[in-house]
Image (cartoon, rainbow, N blue to C red):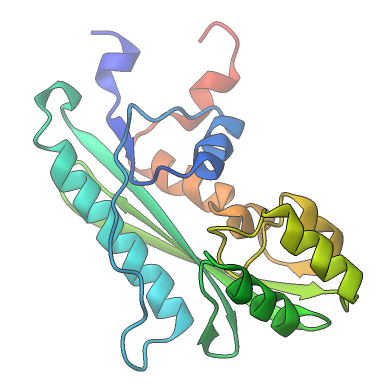
Length: 210
């Protein structure tokens, strides 16, 4: 049996190209991508951190259940993450229309906000490993010209809080305390740790010829 056959298969419960790229950054390529589309609205009185953790768990479980019906995958680890941007207890939307993005940028301008990423790994025997990563981000005070230019770029579309830190909006960030990759969408240190803890050989690809 080869090393590849011996290791558990990895399923990513997200179609996000950002999360795929982040996994590739640490040498991890999922065996399957199974996006789990669920209702993402907060429940009544649900905190932003609880929301991030719940959504990641629900997505990981759904993808795991789908993967188990695909016998060619065998034993699978199902990985999911969900990122929530908030000001206080107010959860900012994943912006789809211009007015939403403008409201978010106006709110974030010149102030700090928090980004929570919930990470869930469903194990080969159906258990769950969780991580919750909190990052504090402060934006500069945005001029009308800066806001207009960013809105015109369209980069905000589909992004929590109406911005992508790895893109043009990186020019707005004056302070970040926590995990940069978590704000992008997948905290890499925590991801590598939970995968390694379940027997997935994250570091093997780092060695040429391994």
